[in-house]
Length: 361
Ligand code: NAD
Ligand code: DAU
Image 1 (spheres, rainbow, N blue to C red):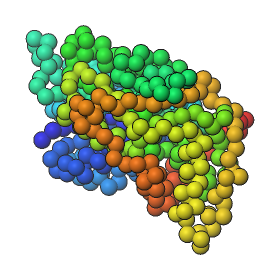
Image 2 (image 1 turned 45 degrees about the vertical axis):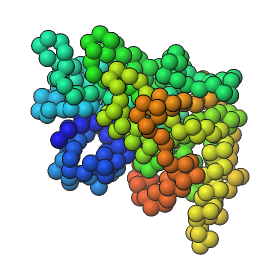
Image 3 (image 1 turned 135 degrees about the horizontal axis):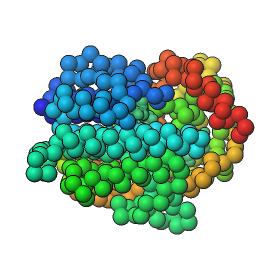
């Protein structure tokens, strides 16, 4: 039985990954979730799995060397799946140093602890171990001018935001470990995810949540920035496939070939809400295109991201399965069925964040 150490498993993608893995492997794997539970980490996301015998949760900070070494000392970890990070670009513009601390230093601690646990006396590594570093397409910068250009694994890194700079630094550390020590790892660089459990600071859940309350829908700049959207379960599947079938030391781009302008996304959400809400639901009258409000642009806002997922398709056979029109319905349905979740995560600190972020926009 393989033991997975998942970092950041209480966040959006991490919790979806844990659900995906238990659905697929049931009792044939063990998962240890290490998460410090920042504003973005929520154990409610894992209610369905918390009583499983093959699941455990450790509340620890990935920058805490002793705590992380202890997890490795107490468990024979086969795979590390490293999600834990500060993930929101707007926050990184306000507090870059938090991103450096978690994303760079935290990754260094994770790498070093795994290396210490897995290294043999001759400097080689125990068979079958792997560190999968979950990264982002934002490290490649922005595709500003050429509509036919894509990000490949060979595209030079050119991060712009403090978030993407910190993720690029963490990727470089993983690459350095692979080059220097032949440390067994893979990196995945994925495009924008959406789906259940996404925190409503991100575009899609924020628009769904605001629209249902008849609140303004803030669209940055001219609304024509392009993101390449992938349903989160497809990302989870890609990670599982890279762990099992990815060639060591390789990087794989993960993306849905689903490029859309932000304003298109907002319009699709509004149309889908109208379609899905019954006439008897009072929220239906609140959902309106009049709510769309163009606001001041994000500083340094990357214009376009678009992933070429050719390598992962060719080498591993991964392809996205969920069309955006279906994924957005699944997502909205999940938010309809989990109103309480949304209420809980938007109470308290979220209000303050929202006021700080949007009051002068
Ligand atoms: P998230 O913000 O929803 O979750 C991050 C999780 O990490 C939270 O549970 C948080 O508590 C935990 N965490 C933060 N700092 C920690 C620390 N110091 N120690 C331990 N735990 C800590 O993020 P997400 O959207 O699920 O993203 C997960 C990973 O995937 C990140 O590495 C991100 O860069 C990457 N990624 C995200 C996307 C996306 O669209 N969301 C796309 C590509 C890559
Ligand atoms: O590309 C992968 C990245 O996608 C991940 O690495 C990040 O962790 C993740 O947060 C996401 O980054 P983005 O900045 O692209 O996601 P966000 O949802 O914040 O914004 C998507 C687009 O929508 C972006 O162009 C900014 C715009 N936007 C966002 C918000 C929150 C708005 O127009 N209005 C908003 O209120």
